[in-house]
Length: 266
Image 1: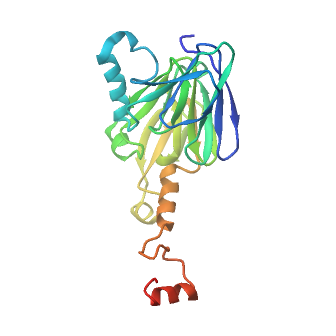
Image 2 (image 1 turned 90 degrees about the vertical axis):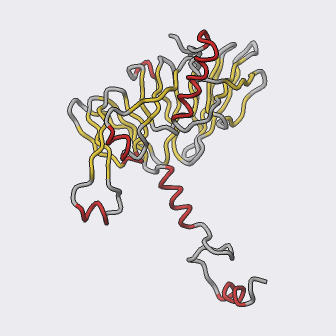
Image 3 (image 1 turned 180 degrees about the horizontal axis):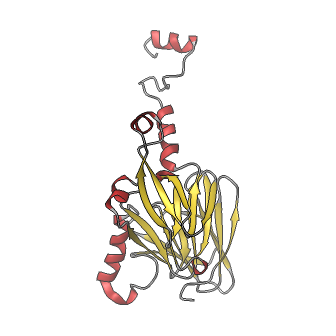
């Protein structure tokens, strides 16, 4: 294996975190801000690039290119490496940023490559490359919901991604087609053909409430789907947020509240 071999354990149900066990000198790389807790003896280092360590010998330009790929996907310029500098095993834990599931991916059993939405990556063993995946068809990029660029995780080690709500893995047979709301697509193996189709019928497209486009996934391969995309959760929170200077949403109201408004908020 080219990647560090790490052990892990998942905790929780709807708000999960993953505990990674590191042997001496083993390293795990994570998104900035993903750390929950770590034991003494683990050293933190902010790094450029994609976390694979493959750009170490290519100098400044190699590191800048690795960091540039992350900027294109909308991620932070930096990543954080956690290395066990002690003599025994140590653990470090990373938390999901919103309610949902953390998905462990053994890339050695998934063809060495998984394509995921650009904000799904959480952490990975050192040696896993976190790059960008350009969708070949312009329609997929412009209307796919997840943008023209998606992330790709390459290597033969463990990687962890997170999804909103309940997670479902669908194994597609050759030629089998699955149609998914674009925001609900979390990840897929590299052999899945990914395309975008417009919702049939003008009335359905305009008034159906499901958007104008959906993703068409054709097997063979595996697909991971989430029940609650973060964009959908955020839109519901925004709709329920206070919309007036009194600090109450439009749906709130009571006799006391009306009196409060009548008195000018004092």
